[in-house]
Image 1 (spheres, rainbow, N blue to C red):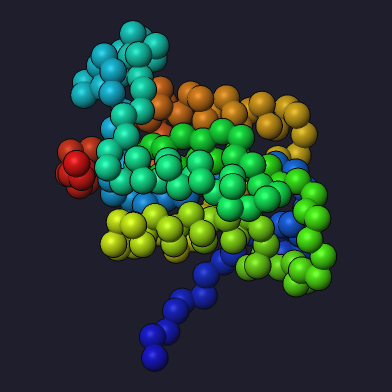
Image 2 (cartoon, helix red, strand yellow):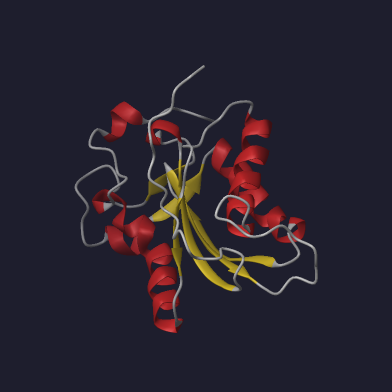
Length: 184
C-alpha cells in the first residue's frame, strides 16, 4: 500500500465551503508543465518591455481549449454555481466562482472535501483528464474566500492582468523553454 506524506490542507478547517459567496481558485498543471497556453505579444520571448504590457494575451493550446470548454459547461452542470471570471495561463488556471442558494434539501453535512467548491474543481479535473486521456493537474488546488467587494475587485484585476505579469509570476518557470511540453 502506498504511503502518503502528511499534507497540510489549504482549506479553512471551520469554514463551510457551501456558503454562498465568491471564491478565487487556482489549479496548477502536474509538474507545472506549460501545456495549457502561451502568453504572446511584443517582447514575450525577450525581457519584458513596457510595450509588452499592452499587447500580452493568452493563446490557448489544445489542452487549454478543452479546459476552457469544460469551465464554461460547468455553469450548466451545477445549478448554484457561476463562473464569473477566469484565465488559463500556461501552467495554471485562475477562476472566480460564485455560489448561490441551492433549492436542494437533504444534502450531506458540508465538509471541505464534499463542498460545492471542492466538487466543482474535482469535476473540472475529471472531465478534462478523461477527454485528454491522462491526469494533467496537481492533486490539490488553492482557494481564497472573497471577503468583500474590494477583495473581489482585487482578484478580478489580478486575473485580467495575469498574462501581463507572467514573467514575474511565482508559477513562471525559471527555464521557460526547458519546461514547455508541446501540445498542438
